[in-house]
Image (cartoon, rainbow, N blue to C red; front, side, top):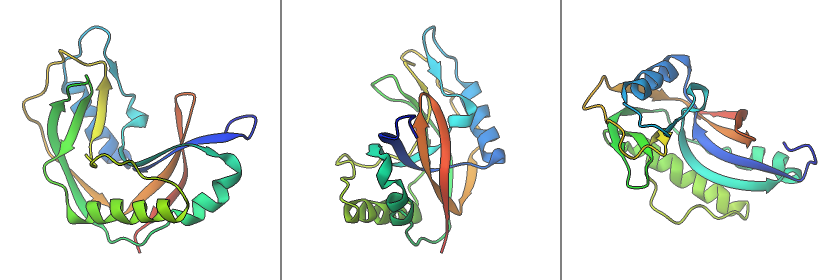
Length: 171
């Protein structure tokens, strides 16, 4: 939380364990980055579920409780590198498992119940590998990352540092 206790910048994410994080790092390092690209630091690699933005810090206990939703474990297979038109380099899943879509929808409902608005744009699950990456050399292929999803996390972003505030396990 910020020093004044005013607001906290938050997001919900699939937060990798060390083994998956190492595989994500290997994918990130397989790219050829142009000058000026900003590869994402290894400890920040994740799949965002929902971005909550700046929230009043006084609401944090309510949010910590209200963002717990039931879900069943599922597998997510990442392994499709792409460079989006806005210069964002990403690793996308080969397909979007129903478990991921269900979790995203349940969290949308939880956000609405808390008086927050989920993003209106279509959900595109991915791991951001780098920003300002126009002209990057995209790896043609690599080993698929098989990620068994058994939890998600509420994460604080504070001056470029991420801190997991709470992990939510499968029901």
